[in-house]
Image 1 (cartoon, helix red, strand yellow):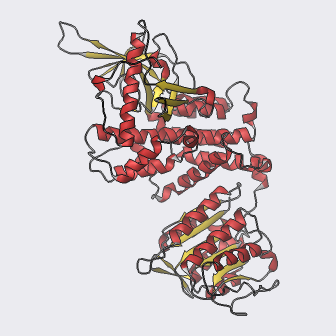
Image 2: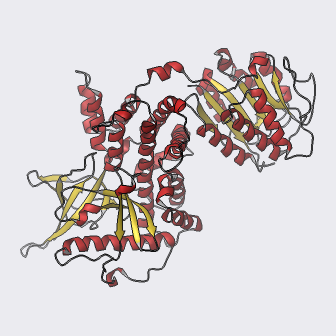
Image 3: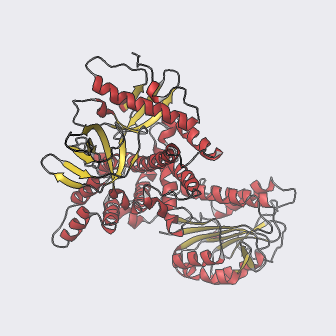
Length: 621
C-alpha cells in the first residue's frame, strides 16, 4: 500500500503557534477520507533521525511527502536541527523511480530553491514558497489543500488554487490569486511572485489529476473477508504463548485445518464481550450470510468489534483509577482527571456508542505514569504508549476505525457510499488486524462473574476458607459452567472481575480450584452480570454501563452481545424492592446499586451523603 508521509517540526527558539493544529487537522482529514488506497505515516515531532527512518522504511512506496515548519532556501529545520534539502530529495528517488511519488509539499518559508533538484530527479509536482509566509496562512493553506484533494477529490491544480484563496483571508499581503499559472510549464524562478505559494511542475498532466494514490484493484478483487483478521489474531496468540493456539499451530503442520477451527480457538480464549463480537463478524451465527461478504453490515460489525474492545480496555483503566482512589494511593485527582471522569459518566447512550475510548485510555495512562510505584493490572498496557514509534500503525488503526464507527453507527446517518463499501471493508479489516496484532495478551486475563461467596470454617480448624461460586466469561457462548474458587482470602462479592489466572485444580469432578489468593481487578459496576441476581439462572447476561437518568434514578446498561440494540438495554432502578422469597437476589442487587451510587460519587467528585451500611430500604418503583 502506498504511504503518505506528513511531518511537522516546531522550533524552541521561534515556535509556530499553529503547527500543532495543522498537524491534527491534516491527519484527521487523511484518516477520515481513506478509501483503502493509502496508509499514513505521521511525524508530529519530526527530527532528522525519524525522518531518515521513515524515508528509508517506506523506500519506493511514498506517494506524497508533506513538510510543515521552519525552512530556508536549501534546508528544512527539524526541531531546530537543520536538514539538507538535497539529501531528502535523493531519499525520495526510489519512490520516484517506482512511479509512486506524485507530490512533495514544502510548507515552510522560502523553500522555492529546493524545487529545482526535486524536479530534476523526476518528482511530478512540488508545492513550495518563494518567501516568508504567515504562520496562520500556512496552517490554513495546508489544511484546506488536503481537504480539497481528500474530501472534494479536486485535481492538484484546483486544490492548490482553492487553498491559496482560503489562505488569502488570513493575510493582507497579496498571494497572487489574480496571476494564474501557465498550463504547460511552471518552473521556479521563471516568474517570481512573492510572498506566495507556488505550484511547480514540468508536465501539466501531473497537476490536472488528483495526487492521491489509486485503489489497488487486484487487492480488492482478491479480498476474502476474515482471512487476514483470523491469521493475524491467531499468530498474535501463538507468539504470546497461548497453549491452545500453540497446539493448533503444531497440528496445522501435519494436516489441513479449516478456518473456523482457528476462529473457534480465538473466540474461546478472549474475554466474552470481545469474543461475542468476533463471533458475529466471523459469521459463526446462523443467518449471518450478509457478514460473510463485503457489505455495509460487515463494515458496521468491524467497527463494532473495535468499539466494544476499546470500551472494555477503557473500563479496565477507569477501574484501575478507582482502585487507586479506594486504596488511598491517590488522595485527590487532578482537574483534568476529574473532568475526564465527569464527561465519561454523563455521556448518553448514543454518545457513548461512538465515544473515543482511545483518548480516555491515553489520558488515564498519562496520569498513572506520573504516580510513584504504581503498576498496571494489565501490565501489557505499558507496551501500547502512543509515543513509542512501534505503535504508530496501532494508533493510526484506532483513529481510522473510530472514524468508521462514526460513519456506520446505526443511530447516525450513514456517511458511506455504496460504491465505497468493498474498498472500505478491505481497509477496515486490515486496520482491525493491525489493532488486534497488539492485543494477543488478552488471553492471559480471565473475565469472571462472582455469583456467591460462602464461608467454610470448621471448629477443628483454625483456618477460614472462602468458597467462591464463579462463572468464567471467556468465550463467545451465553451458557457458562459454574466453577468454585477455594481461597484463603475472599474476592469482592456480586461483581465482575478480571483475574490473572494462577490457581491449581483441586477437584475436577466438583470443578474446584484452590489457592491462597487471586490477584484481581473489580470491573463492577461498569460491567455487571445481570443474571447474577437470579438464583436459578445458569447463564450470564453481561452488560456495560450506558448512562444514568437523573429524573427517575435509573442506571441504563447495554448488552455486550447487541450493544446497539435498544431492545437489549437493561435498566437498574436503585429504588427497586424484592419480594419476601427473593432475599438472595435482593442482597446481590443491593450490592450493585451501592456500587453504582459510589461510582457516581467518584466520577462526579461528590461527597457520599449516605454510608453504604446505612442504605435506606429499597422501595417499589
